[in-house]
Every structure is written in structure tokens, then in C-alpha cells.
Length: 88
Image (cartoon, rainbow, N blue to C red; front, top):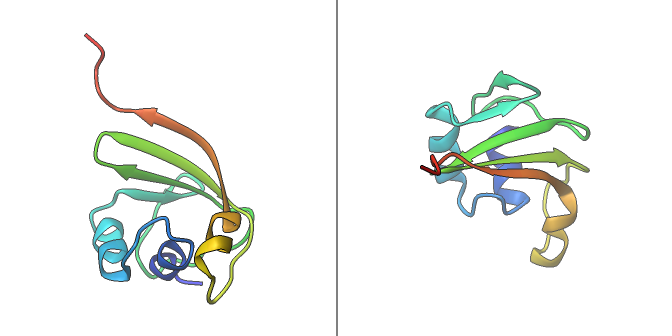
């Protein structure tokens, strides 16, 4: 499945156009490699997404074409969240 579609279906990012922009800005990597919106993702892949001043690492559990809001969270597991802000 395309990365931008997975981000939308899994509800990590609400809109596909926004997911595509985030991908195009180089703010997402799959298994340590910079990812494009059209990159393929599969179960077992690790995504690192930069949301503003936060890095979120998730592992993909399953890939589904569609999902209801209640089941979207089961498509991935949050491995860790890190703040990018300096704590001086």
C-alpha cells in the first residue's frame, strides 16, 4: 500500500493530501530510509514520522484498504515518542 494512503487509513494523519505533503517534505522514513508518498509499506515496517517538534516511531501491524475509526489504531503500534526540543 502507498505510504500516504496508509497514513490516512490508519488515521496517523487525517487527510491524504496532508500525508502527501509530509512525505514530500522528507519528514517520514521507512526502516531508516527517507520515504516518498508513493513508497510501499507492509506489515512489520517501522515508520518514523516528524510532527513539528516530536518524532513518533511506529511499527505497522497490518495493512488494510479501509478501516473504521475504532479499528484504525490496531493497524500500528507506537514504539516511542521523542521530543526534539532542547531542554536548556
